[in-house]
Image 1 (cartoon, rainbow, N blue to C red):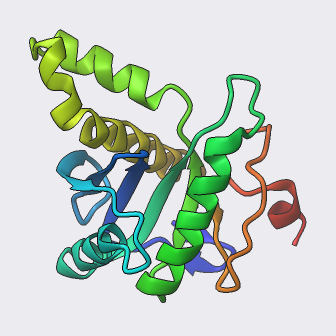
Image 2 (image 1 turned 60 degrees about the vertical axis):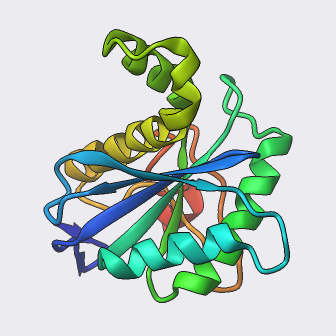
Length: 183
């Protein structure tokens, strides 16, 4: 597959579901076919940001080629206050894991889908909290993997080295923004 002249090669992909208390992490196989849960990392809001360091370690351990970070949006597609926190986290993460790209992807309904999947699997509701962030990361990653296969390009909007990222396109909510498409 190609993306603006680049081949989408083999390599594990990682997805992050960022919460106020926990960070859910999921990874794919090297061929980018199946997303599986990895771990739930406790959120660390200190300047040292241990959660960012742990995610960076997972990126290195798994030889990740791209990180997908779920961007929470309203059902209308508009970004809310939680989106700003995710964008800030993404800027920090992008600097730490460079040159591995970090891409924002639409995560609407990922936690709802995760709760439904856990319930359908017979996991008691009171035990969802332990793994729901991982399950939401799986939902985010599987959507990105499916988007890669469908579009032939990396999904979402890349956070540039200077920390800037475009807005998700209202057309596909996962592929390139209109600005990226016109380049």
